[in-house]
Image 1 (cartoon, rainbow, N blue to C red):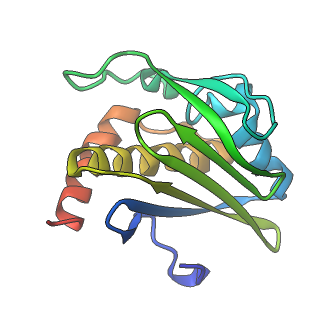
Image 2 (image 1 turned 60 degrees about the vertical axis):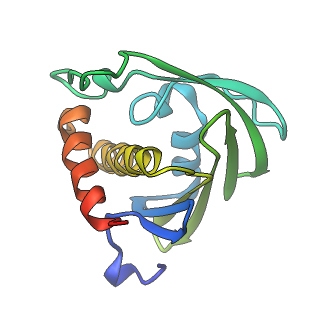
Image 3 (image 1 turned 180 degrees about the horizontal axis):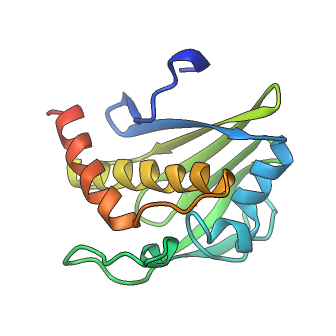
Length: 177
């Protein structure tokens, strides 16, 4: 998946319970690391939550996906305006690798690889045990990473939930059982 000429915006199932998705971002690597680890930057594309950069450190992520665009998005029926998740740092190699254990949806690893003036961000989410969770998380990562790329260009993203709904349908077709 590291051939940058064929980098797909879509995630790939590398095992039955593992999703891998990549984005090429403006560098340097420290800038992307800050977007992953600093609350004020991370909340603009993923989730809020103060994070102590220490192996084993617990923290809470707070998602407010309706607030990721202007105008704000309305979440689909059955979704809350805010979602909280207890998390902990399970691997830390600043500014190249960060793994986070999430309470009920596995573990996520962020790997950063300099590519000239850009940075290849690889997100690997392990422990996606059922199809519904896989589809929701694949669409979520895709949309969150698209927002990160768009914001890194100084642009305004489309409403999160509109993109998420479209992408969930795309992933349902892509990951046919």
